[in-house]
Length: 86
Image (cartoon, rainbow, N blue to C red; front, side, top):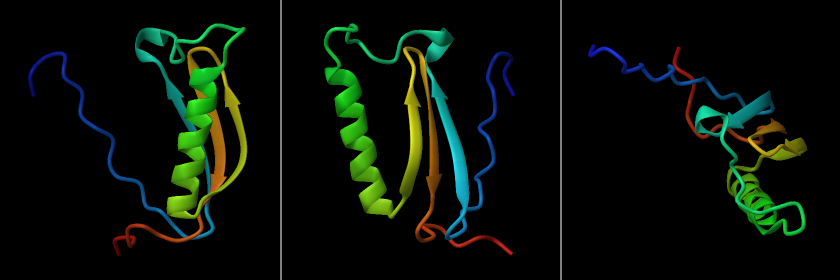
């Protein structure tokens, strides 16, 4: 491995009905939404994409927090997209 390159995380096993706490952060903790406090278009677009993904994958989104440079999601899976390896 070349110096400075990181390996990706191993794939996670997804189970139907499982609860997941997901987080995402901007690179170098930079802002992930370009809007300001008076205009929340980026955040509304992000929530629309989340709703689309939740519908497609049958997730139940139980909670979320959108911070300036990161987010938290709490969701429950409805069905498995990938079968767990045995």
